Image (tube, rainbow, N blue to C red; front, side, top):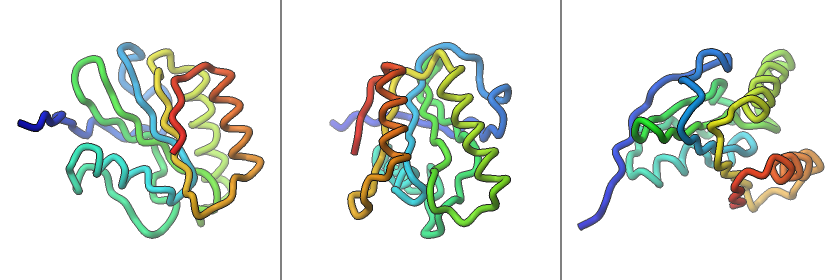
Length: 141
């Protein structure tokens, strides 16, 4: 018998204060725009309708929160990089992600997805160093 997790979309937050109470454990998925973060969630939980994925980069603009149980949440973070969004939106997204990394005590695991067809940029290296400095459990794919 296969064990399946029951996962449920909880909310989209465009502000840290809109997130659930900062307790329990959060696993965040992070990477460049169009690296496959949403698709990875759908594959992982065997639900093609869980997280919307698109061929157009930059569709995820908020922190999308999924609930596994009362203590475990999955956070689908907006991507960074070449998304075709305004400078103002890029800045807002960058600030939101920085606040999330800096303030959330419940963030325990960060999964960093990288598209192997792309070379690693200086920004990618800075993110990796930030992750290691914060001592998250770090998965690089």
